[in-house]
Amino acid sequence: MESSSEIPKSPSPGTLASANPGFQVSDTALSGASLPSPPERSSSQGGNPLSKTTSNVSSHSHRQSFAENQRHPPPSPRTQRHPSFTQQAIQDLMNHPPPNRHQNPRYVGRDWRDIAIGELLQPDEVKWAELDTSIQEATKTLFQSSPNNVVLVRQDSSSKEAVSTFDHSDLNAYLLAVVGLAKPEEEQVALYTDISVKAQSQEEIPLRTLQPIFRHEELVKLPADSTLDKAIEVFGGGIHRVLVTNKDSEVVGILSQLRLLEFFWYEAVNFPLIDRLYTIPLRDLQIGTQQIIAINADAPLADALFLMSSEGLTSVAVVDNGHNVVGNISTVDVRLLTNANSLPLLKASCMHFVSVILSERGVEHGRDSFPVFYVNPYSTLAHTVAKLVATQSHRMWVVESASPSPSAPATPLLQASNLPPLSTLSPPVASPGRAGSPAPGSAAVVVPPPGAITTSTPQSPSAQGPFTSVPASALPGAGLSGRLTGVVSLTDILNLFAKTSGLRPLDPSEQRARRRRSSSCSVRPTLDTGRDNGRGSVDFRR
Image 1 (cartoon, rainbow, N blue to C red):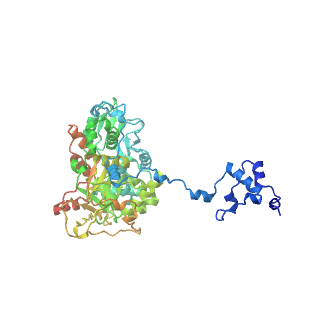
Image 2 (image 1 turned 45 degrees about the vertical axis):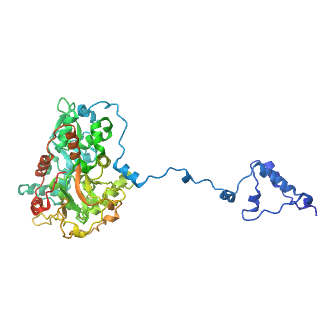
């Protein structure tokens, strides 16, 4: 039989290719990738018209099969990418974060001491409440007052003169009064009892009634045309905010320590004297203090709130049994306790509340967030200020590092035999009108300065309440800190800027002592006793 008789009667691929130019035929695709190609016929055997047609089509439009693509893979993009950062480069970037190096035309060639306070104000940032405004409405306004975190209180809606303020520390004091954890003076027991009864019956309580339980800070006012050197002298002396007034003595804005530090961070390129300080490590600047107080991670949250209120603190470090920083609780976090359903958290551990803070922050920002509230003595001032600005915090906890080398672990290996004992506070706190109630503050930790080391084993107060304490190691980043040894605050940094520029700020210790006197004295005897025992003085006003 001739070769032409072996061709099927169906249309040939060549015919299909001619009818449809987009249809491509491949010998490999027809035969399969795993089968060898059939032997070709010689011309003496007459040849195969189908083979000739297919060969002509393939030579013009050959489509590679999957198997052919695998024989000749494309080059890997890894061979062309830039090399990754080394650990040293990453550490250098953390220690020297790049600030905004673009000069602002508004400040080029100007001395920061000649810049008016009014140039830093934001429009419509002042939030007002009246003395007859209820605590419920004032709290809603407070939550909308970010970033100042304060509401100015006036006599009536027609006034532009502030007679008081309402902030998260005042809200914390009110919360403690409502749940019966505050310890008032004998002449104020009736007032605290009345506040608690009205709050539990959901009656509106005006701010006027609550003024005696709030902490009254000095209201410092500066004209809008005053220069920044006047403001930094005030802030370097420990004042947290100033009220900015116009020519008619009406309040038109608020300037806070954090706002001024943000200005120096973003505009430092215009001020060489300030810019040079950013590259210096904290240990060489010798700023901050080693007189600190913290709260044990196993302590009930109520202890931390009571400690901040009674000692005039705006935040407290949360530490484990080795004094390693595992979290931070501030008065701003009290906003998570304003709902009646969240009040059981007061019996939960501080570590549990830290996990709640992180969860809420993740919901607000749409991602997991673990803000870092600590630095080490080898951190530069730029590193410290960058963290303060990023976290909108008033202080950074200083933790000891085993070595300045970036290859060393951030958390030193601590032995129980060389840790100082935890000093516990047990003030006889009674609820208003209820003598003998359990005393909060039993797990506050006085952190002694380095050198005051004993051989006692640290004692861990047991957690109270039905809540299970969240292990510190369960939180992301919790094991990357170190042993708490000090604290650096906004006051310390602005005081440094003022002195470096030739100014004379007031002594911050005077303002801290005044702020402490305006708070409750319920835990002070125990702390004073701790000083007499040789554990070093404790600074409560950072």
